Image (cartoon, one colour):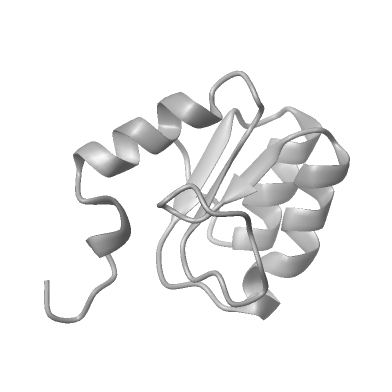
Length: 89
C-alpha cells in the first residue's frame, strides 16, 4: 500500500481504480467527504473500521472496491481495527 499524503487524493485513486484500497485513522470530514463520494459513485465501498457505512463523522476510513473491501476489513480488524486511533490504547 502506498500513501501519497492526502486522504482526498488516495480516495480519488481508489475511485479511479489506480489504488485497490485505502485505510487511515483519525481523519476529519474535510479530509474525506469528497473522496468518499467519488469512491461511492464509482461503485466502491466506504465504511469505518467496524464496517459501518461512511458518514461525515467517520474518523477511520476503509475504502475499496466491492471485491476486496471485506478482505481489507478483516485485515484491519486483525491488527486492532476500531481501536487503532483510541488515545487509551
